[in-house]
Length: 155
Length: 393
Ligand SMILES: Cc1cc2nc3c(=O)[nH]c(=O)nc-3n(C[C@H](O)[C@H](O)[C@H](O)COP(=O)(O)O)c2cc1C
Ligand code: SF4
Ligand code: FES
Image 1: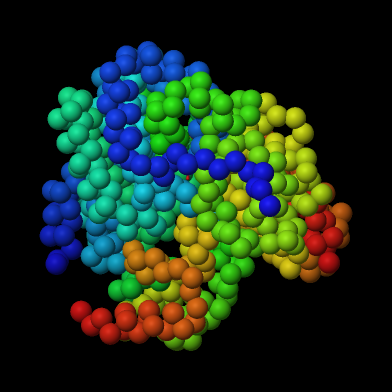
Image 2: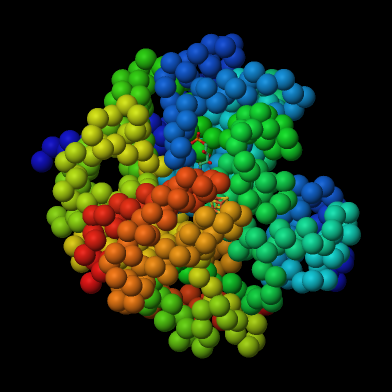
């Protein structure tokens, strides 16, 4: 969908008050994976606030990407319990499989690999999120299967 | 061996019973419910431990055309995962607690601020909320509407005023207090912010009544508490236990036989070394002798294979990443502490430098604007003072 049309649709759905801003931003990220400068300007116009205010909010939240990201965003928990339970191996397995480093996106724009803080599954660490999906008690083997599944998902 | 810890089974007990409790409670007056809560001495389970009854009383006494009830489900403290399970398995109790809060305070709108990382729960929460709305309308004739607000990946938004800013579409930067949310909260209106577990426990107070609730726990730390237990333990998971347990009994039951320290209350809590297990009790500070530690419920165990330097390093990275950056002592302080311990470890700074870093945490405690910057000192000093050699060599 064209970005202006998407934002119009989201503004109709959530409303045009300042307190509707984050749901709208989340809606843009859901569709586009990130919030472009153009999107920020358009949202500001729809909500009748300044683009700087939209930018300020976007850049505060780790899930509101302001740079292009892959279709599947992988977030590996780097907090202490997962660290103790094998986070390093999780990251190196993912880096090997995807041939990118933490913080990067694959060339074909399918995967981004990011770190995040405690995901609330410490008793089942190490843990990662792929978009909204949680994967617990990760092993290299499990990770290979998960990534294979997402690679097959063509649409 | 008989466990010395007292298990409680309320939060995850039958939700059928909870419905009866809600209907019964709604036949009482607002004042009767409030009295019961104050008598129970229920304290907030989000970490700060403020009296729930008093908080509601303040909000009730405000005159306003609109008030709000917010359930804080931002659960981001490292080592905590109990609120997720409550929402998953005992949603009715949480919604019941919110509706009772709405009745007492005079609010007809509630929100669940759910951390973005728990987005997968949304469909089932929506379904539960929709059924609950029907119950309120059909059986209680009570107009109270609950919505979910999804967070976007920010630990500081668990702080109640940052949470409110976030709901208003702004950066999640904590406000100055006072005014407290009960006076000036969401959109400037009186707002009650309570933790998920606190709201579920309101239902427990209503079910068993204040006198029985108080029989659990010790002194002012009444009732039960959910603990999220992780790290070097063969039994990691979520357990509902009576307040006031001694740490030595806890370690006996949950340790792996080689426990070196327990981090109580997450990265913003305290690290207790083995030699203090015996004298440490889990409960709210003001009413216990010896060392007592309140906790949002995070209990992380470390055995002797762990480097406490790595643990502290990990916490400081966490704080550095999650500081909202609004005030200088916290923004710069976290970075300097992290740099500082690395420099000492490398040998670029002498061990004397640790003293300066400890002074820095004291300054952060005094001058930071919110609980994040103020509590960095807790883990920093408790680790550095108890495991000094590990910081240096
Ligand atoms: C940095 C920081 C993070 C916090 N995170 C949470 C949280 O994730 N969940 C929560 O219930 N309270 C959290 N709190 C405490 C809230 O500010 C607030 O005290 C609490 O939600 C009140 O509810 P209660 O009285 O039921 O505990 C946090 C506080 C600070 C300073
Ligand atoms: S103490 Fe830290 S998190 Fe709190 S307001 Fe200051 S910079 Fe932000
Ligand atoms: S430390 Fe990784 S989920 Fe909590």
